[in-house]
Image (cartoon, rainbow, N blue to C red; front, side, top):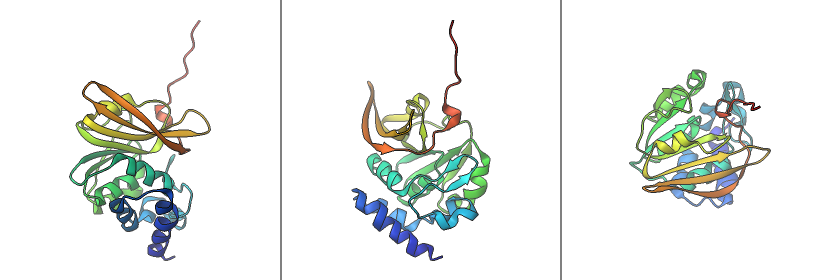
Length: 209
């Protein structure tokens, strides 16, 4: 399979046509080898309009959704980023000139993606996803959905930092952009999306008498 040609088709048919006008982002998605970020037997599907498996419960986000999410962050070279459950997104941001840490709770994800992340200069951390590694981030993003507002992620942002994530509690989720100010956090809805929810962030059911 000609992955380079497939990568160009992905950018032309799934990214540019969906109002993603950031040329640095387009270039990064056109350069990062997405096929290296999914299970080897799913590499053929890396550039299709689907969510191929990485390892365990982790999947790649749809190219269109990820491009729109990253564009909303207005990422700039030299910024410090944390990517939770999203190794491909981490590589794209690194290619755009950011200093990136990719965090996972399942080490099997890095067994698949570790070499590609190292090639892009991305640091990795294995830790529970509700415990962000580090603080003072300019931006945080995830390729998976969360069941509710991720307070611990917001706390890891510096003032002025941005968080882009899909919040999903039903069949369809909503991509949102948070900006942390000195006196609070603003929230703006972006578009509908349906990536898998991070099950480890779903609260345990509780019962009250």
